Image (tube, rainbow, N blue to C red; front, side, top):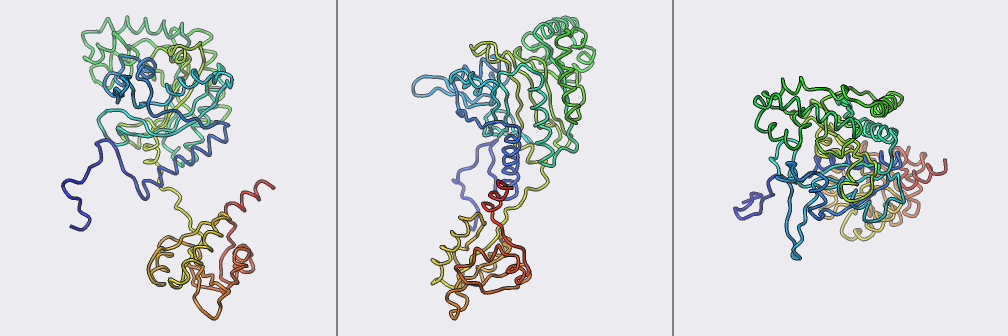
Amino acid sequence: MGNKARKDTPHAIRGTQDMIGDEAERFAHVVDTFDRVRRLYGFGRVEVPVFEATAVFARSLGETTDVVSKEMYSFEDRGGDSLTLRPEFTAGIARAYLTNGWQQYAPLKVATHGPLFRYERPQKGRFRQFHQLDAEIIGATEPAADVELLVMADQLLKELGVADGVTLQLNTLGDSATREAWRDALVAHFEAHRGDLSEDSRERLERNPLRILDSKDKRDRPIADAAPSIDDVMSDEAATFFAKVTDGLDAAGVSWERNARLVRGLDYYRHTAFEFVTDRLGAQGTVLGGGRYDGLIEALGGPETPAVGWAAGIERLAMLVDSAPSAVIDIAVIPAGTEEELEATTIAEQLRSEGISVDVAFKGNFKKRLQKANKVGARYAVIVGLDEAYANEVTLKNMENGAQKNIEKQHLLDSIRRPEIMEMVSGSPIQGRRRRLLLDDNE
């Protein structure tokens, strides 16, 4: 049978994925880069449960949205409570902000990443279990919070090397008065053309009229394109807020373009709405999006609380990454025979404790273990027990050019960090991550 699965072998659930090799490394690279960038901006890590009371998402996403009515993984637990696997992060973070008294930390800057769940048709870049990066600022009314999140997102894309071909599309949904006036104008416009709208848009007209603006149905496009603009009803306060956001982006050197049709259907969204869009993923063009949601925490039963945030699909970003940095193995420790395996283990752990990456082959004769060292891309090999005449020494071998030198075991660590010793095997010294960090701290 070889590696062929039997008929009764379990299969992965549709819309989920298994990753290994380059795909898993690109995924990890996105997460690692996000963690590094969010620290640069002072965003602390937050963790929230994978499931919440269904009401948390129903109230935050809206009872009539497709996510709530069609896509949530909801179930009744043994206690009779309705629970839901999280379809997004923001609602859970907002709930945690309320129930844990995190108001004392406002403005609260937090970030997280992990799996989310939606029952929808799987396609390129879209899964039923998918993963997102998420960043939120809760308790800040100032446009500068919007700017910082957008600049942080822009830097993340640049650090990942995927910024080329990605465009920041920006819009304002105005303050409460502006949004309400725009909603009334849109309803009047779409009602006048109700008979020409698609079935979906006629349904949206009753519960979510702003969503008609981004309809992909050809019947809706001429009507949506002729709809009133939010600029027609913009209050002075809302216009000033948006100008401060765009001025901040210009000051930070972040390119953007106005998309006056970019909307958020739920009423708690205010002011800034944005998406980073690419043409490299086909239909799934948005790689990162978000906006200001000043009314969400109030909708969950809390006090009026300003907030702004964004989320990005890890899978989509990983698809844009050309290649992830490969894992670097500094040294392969190779026992010449089975008698030297314990000593090889001791040496390997001594090196690792100093922040030097080490690989030890578990089995095989000396030749096969040396081949394994080549396969993992080790820069050097430390060979233990190659010559019984030198019992207190190991052999340091340059895996690229084959040069080698015997070194006393007790001086191994110092030797691989001394340029004059490493020059003898035509290689560069190995600093080790721990040593490098200590140097950085003292510089």
